[in-house]
Length: 87
Image 1 (cartoon, helix red, strand yellow):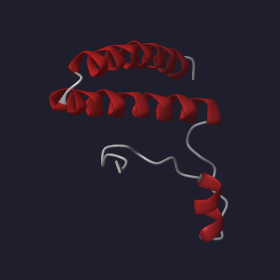
Image 2: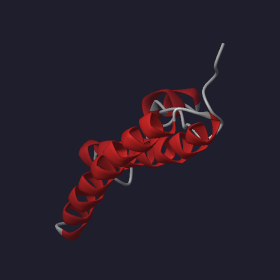
Image 3: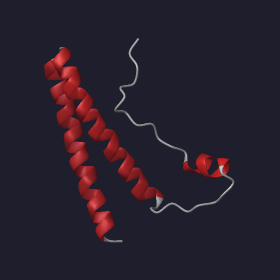
Image 4: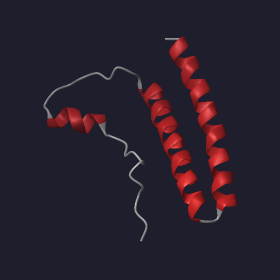
């Protein structure tokens, strides 16, 4: 049984964290920006993991998937930069 690699981050429920501490704290970024950040982080982590998987076999598959995620990461980064520049 394969487990989630250590490099994979788990999304955090910000409302749950605030509720546990009995406080209401506004996030420093809006939800749309947060979503872009998390999606980009996920893609970058996937690229790293695919590189490791490629060393274990099925290199062509992992290289193709990594290339797809690289394109997605580039698009997410461009969108994030545009969003932050407009802030």
